[in-house]
Image (tube, rainbow, N blue to C red):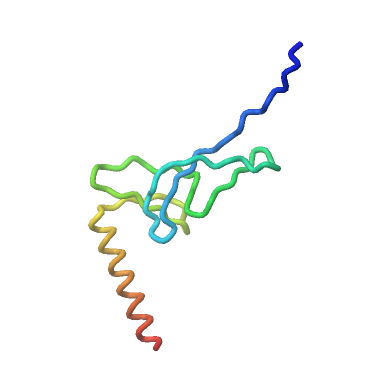
Length: 97
């Protein structure tokens, strides 16, 4: 018989990272299993287990946290939307003064 202690293999789950403010896709990583509960994983903010779809060249993936799905848009469209969103926020804050 083998007297060498057997170590259980560490279990991980693939997660997909996005910018918490913009939702823009940042890459892949692995979430670790919680030490006290087997089969449960620590999913950090700015990450999801939902795999993004394949996109065409020149497109940017954006994760919708509220609806829990990925969308794609052109980089120019993304920048324009962010600019208009910031402009609207600025106007609202100026009006509240």
